[in-house]
Image (tube, rainbow, N blue to C red; front, top):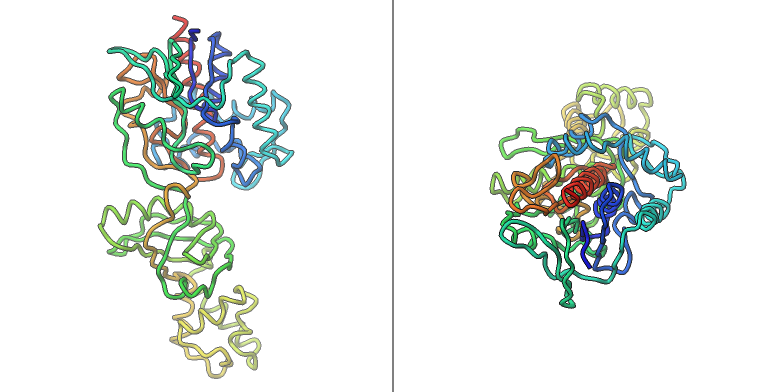
Length: 421
């Protein structure tokens, strides 16, 4: 049987591509190697499914540091506002949380996945699960179908590769689409982990002194070997048995990977600012004032209202201050050293967890070889790409899923128009 459009991959981008292609009159087949659709979508946003972000388009693109500008045309076709309207049009009420993140009111990813899969079925898309694709079929000029691992060949006027990256492989993202793209003449830019926890060999990390300690509203900065700031991110941070995790660490991770490579160094220095809204002098003055206010109190008890209890002895020791020192005996320079430490607590980071343990894959199909207005290959007619298989990556917070939905919709619409012309 021949189809107008064959979509490979039933994740966020593939499902949205199937919706758009069928909506635009195409006869669509969706094939997926797994036993159910939308698996990665089902665990996104901590199982609550952060469907998009409500920020203005320019702000949105700034939060997609991996080639976000490529998305201008796709967002003009299907924007974050359109994504919100799409889900609300299916009866899924959404709510906006901090930093523009949009969640279903139900707080259940299943609500979103079920609605999307039902929409695909309702629009008459043929769905084949447990159907791994061996290769995409090409002639000199165009894509013309797929061959399954069973040897079965299926004809299609257009083929959309929506197979995801290599992160979270338990959901089926194992990089299947890259060799198919290469077979069409495409280049794959170097793959690396992004939005991934950081690793460190600091003795105090290895001894697990701070393991499990969470810091709220800090700023984490990444530095070059010569002391120039590369990037800083504000958010929460978690100390683990292997290094650093939490939103601020995840956002800095791609910059750690790039800095290690660019400067050819074994580790990169990060600093934690526990009081982003205050200067060193203000931190010094505030803590000194607290000590003066209760001159009989030991330093460790003076600092308890300001810092997590486990951090107090750790910081005092590094500043060379005895825990039980009282106001009359506070050494001025070490107290200033402590204030500086609270503003720029150093951590040497030697890398990240693996690509498979990352939330998002950096790298992918080279965007110079893809038309941003249609997501069609510039090398093969009728071949389209969408989602994480492309060299696009954003921060967590609804940005990657927005990129998947907008490129998916654009690819589906364009493929349908191409196939039917």
